[in-house]
Length: 89
Image (cartoon, rainbow, N blue to C red; front, side):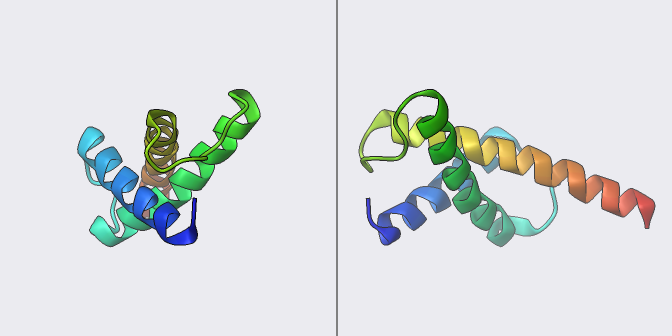
């Protein structure tokens, strides 16, 4: 999968993760989409480590599920860290 396909995958996965996990994580949609790209990277890493296959093909369901899972994890962690930093200030 090329860089452009990977970016599109991450942007869509971030939007889906935001729809699944609504709330006030801060940063708005732009940050959510950036976190989606990071989540897609994390999902690919998880896939390569545990399921012997990362983000190989754009149109495979495994690729999408791993990207969305990674985006959810990154979004939860970011929301937790954002809350902690605001509560200390």
